[in-house]
Amino acid sequence: MTDILERARTKVLDDGEGLSYDELVEVLQLPDDQIPELLQLAHDVRMKHCGPEVEVEGIISLKTGGCPEDCHFCSQSGQFTSPVRSVWLDIPQLVKAAEETAATGASEFCIVAAVRGPDERLMSQVRDGIKAIQAAVDINVACSLGMLTQQQVDDLREMGVHRYNHNLEAAKSYFPTVVTTHSFEERWETCEMVRESGMELCCGGLVGMGESLEQRAELAAQLAELGPHEVPLNFLNPRPGTPFGDLPIMDSADALRTIAAFRLAMPRTVLRYAGGRELTLGDLGTRDGLLGGINAVIVGNYLTTLGRDADEDLALLTELKMPIKELAKTL
Amino acid sequence: MTTGSPSYCGHCGRPADAEDHAACAVRLAMEPPRFCTRCARRMKVQVTPRGWTAECVEHGVLTS
Ligand code: SF4
Ligand SMILES: [Zn+2]
Ligand SMILES: [Zn+2]
Image (cartoon, rainbow over all chains, first blue to last red; front, side):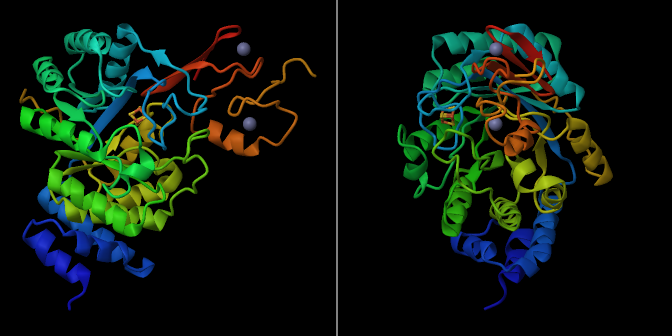
């Protein structure tokens, strides 16, 4: 049997096909001394199938904390003794955040709410917010508002939402260990409705939550099956007061193997660095990931934690000769 | 207690001088404070792409 990297080169790089679950397990088992070669292959795949551009996005929490769900990694669940208090952002602050994001050169601005799914109040706040942003800023607006009904999918599309984020969070076999208040299937359903609606689907997950290596491969394979336009990859940042608050920070070599495996599972997707990279990878690892399959970043801060300085990230992209993807004028 | 020095840790909310908060200090470089350092109340924190604000009902608003 030929070496997995050899086979991946033919299958993914040459033929543009993603690796299977079994092949991804092999990738995740590669020894440390083969990581540079693995990252190089993932980078080659990204360059060939996506190009050198990097998609930059900013995110904002419209409604923070007090969520009724119990995702064990999340500081915004109202079920744990997390220090995060419930708070709403007003429209002028929302527009200001969109302006700050656009000023970095970002093409995407994602409005996030900590909810199971949107109620009327949230939908109307989002409608007003999007109108105000569109009047003031040239940027694509994305939303992440939890599980949706078909009507809400249609309404969001109508409002001009360009992309909708709803993560699988974890592999199907690990999901019940991470969330008990809703099911993997419920998440999947919302994702499918979004994908069918014509909005772009953004769907990813977290790693470093105590899952096995096989479950990491499983998550990548399940995402590939779903076929989202974008996959945000988060590394667990253990939050005080949450059930996963005492888990160790993920090993950086494992994080890099995961990045490359995700790229080899989904050669054409927008693979975004989301939360936790500062902690797991640091500055050096951040660069390795950008040269190992990542082609999108969240710039600036996250929802409840701070990110790397936006200017440092932008300088790194310039240094790596990776131009920022320009705002698509296709809407 | 010396005036001017914080009484509580902004990260964990426990008394500042009762234990070592070195790990909390590291965390505070990567996240906004969650507790008021004067009264230990949980603050209302809003993170934005390039900053944050944290408000204590009693002691007002802190900004990054
Ligand atoms: S649904 Fe979202 S906001 Fe609510 S607990 Fe889960 S991850 Fe956190
Ligand atoms: Zn402390
Ligand atoms: Zn106070």
